[in-house]
Amino acid sequence: MTKNSMYTSKTLSNFTNPKNYGKLKNPDGVGKVGNVVCGDVMYLYIKVDKDKKKIKNIGFETFGCVAAIATSSEITELAKGKTLKYGMNIKKDDIVKSLGGLPPVKVHCSILAVDALAEAIYNYLKKNKQPIPADLEKKHERIKQEKEIIACKYKDWTDAESKAVKNK
Image 1: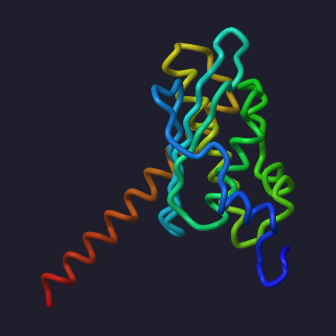
Image 2: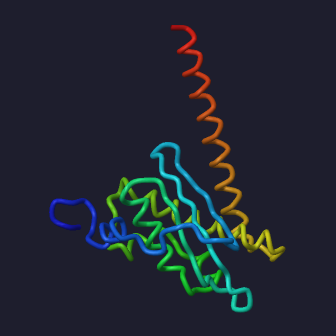
Image 3: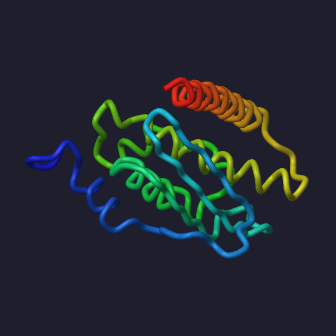
């Protein structure tokens, strides 16, 4: 960790000068994940070399904190030029280690980054009628369930807020 900061210099560098930032034109796959608790939202875009099944280009757009942007940037660096299979196997610990660590309260950002890449790969495979590995399907279903739970909780909260405003 850097002096006077809870983040490593590599994390801060990825935040201030993110790699592969931006939406790709006509992406082959898109992954979108978010966490309503912390407010982070990540979009990850991939272009795939279909013959080699490699991620030939990757980009991201993230609305979030230092760790969310840094982990988004770092996963693009870890996955670019690698096979889809390699990308599917990147773990949160790989990102944390590559960044030189994250504060424990920010490790969830690395999970979001891994999930965003998994969703982009899933999206690519699904659109191209490719077989989806069982572990990727399982991860996609978990992410989908989490999105549904968050959507329900958000609706409950907004309904309660609307009711409270009407009762004033």
